[in-house]
Image (cartoon, rainbow, N blue to C red):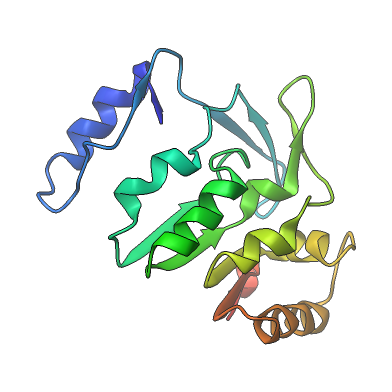
Length: 178
């Protein structure tokens, strides 16, 4: 789903690549979601978002079923419905990679994002093969505000032991824990 103000830009940029299938991109009669990032330091920032685009639904995933890999990057946290992700898992043999990012963020009345408990997060990761989160998102999933790298590693090993193929935790300037 793309807003009409951004649709042409995406088609122009991706249309140069013959292996990109663009026919399933839907142009919606609204402004595309915009996120403003305000950096407080090299590694911390505030995020302010405009209204999210409607999510991808279970009816929309037909174009993804024959893919080898599906990458889902949750920009708003409302980008795809859980039912659509489950349908994709059931109907496809694709490797499904999800960056859970904004699912861990609520949005207040001004559009500012804040960390919150992630509803049904285990159900989301049961439908994927690879999970990517940053250190703060991992702590949020584990029910904490902050975790040491050792505690993050314990959390990541646990979710892999529970059925994930890979858990990638990004650690800002410290790299990534895979």
